[in-house]
Image (cartoon, rainbow, N blue to C red):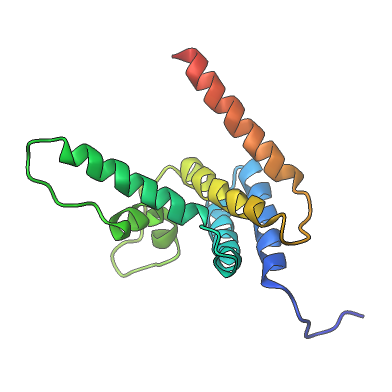
Length: 160
């Protein structure tokens, strides 16, 4: 008989969410994959902060802000600095809008597969960063995901 109330590590919840996100992704259920991966990404990020490790979201956000402002500064035109907040909202737009049903915004324009890929990629990156400090299971679907992204990237480069 299962205990009704259990003590569960949040990192284990994140692992389960990531596994489910990957399964949903490979089943073509990109909206579910996006939401589950975002939840896992955030749980893993919390653990990373405890160990002074920068989560993938923060790392990518900083890099994009730096590139955007560098490119803008090379122009002769006046420009408004791109902020962390601007890029954070852009990176999480699909996820944030997908779980809020407002009075007027009942549709969302997005590329579901791309948004799921980006979010899963960050969650897998965070998961990998925690491997050495925690006893985490091997995720075969995560390995498949990374391999397929690399293969897809190589194919695009070869096609160009």
